[in-house]
Image (tube, protein in one colour):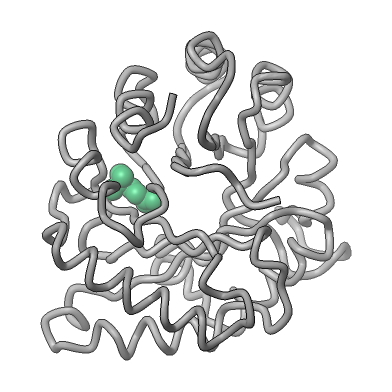
Length: 250
Ligand code: PGA
């Protein structure tokens, strides 16, 4: 079943110890007795099972921030998709720019991770986006086309795939493309997805990169923007909830 819109996902990154994180999850769960859209929390893996238990019954999606591409084996420090599912995850982020650019993950590896997530029964959020250099050189669409061709699995049920467009230069910087530029990019992405899969036009497309309560409504009002992937502002219950309601969620 497709996720109800708006889809607002909070990527906590490497932030939060147990007490504060569970308090944050609890504050959100209290507000969201019956979600009309989709709210997702992507906590550090160490507290994933506790966050999942804390929001159990509230309809929140809880997910991992990354997974290994193999099912099991001698990969010290890594977590498989099945382990995340076992801890209570229903979804996983792959291909975040902090892993692509910070840790050298390429399209082929991101695709294998996405396939591993699907094989473990998880939904997958594949992050794509151009660097500032690529943006300034006018290569935005070429980069997105390449990432869509290379980092998405060939076979996927559209309801289990989310694509998050996150310009690398907008992440954590307070800078965003104009909402017109985001709308143009998302319309292009919609048609790229329709070319890639039979039901590709139904795949949810999120915008990410410095989404805050004061720009969320304008960004999420655009036709092909189905929601947002939120970093910094997802660490505060009021901000995260405001972003969700600005996108039409209740
Ligand atoms: P930001 O991060 O909202 O802090 O810019 C977004 C992301 O990395 O997903």
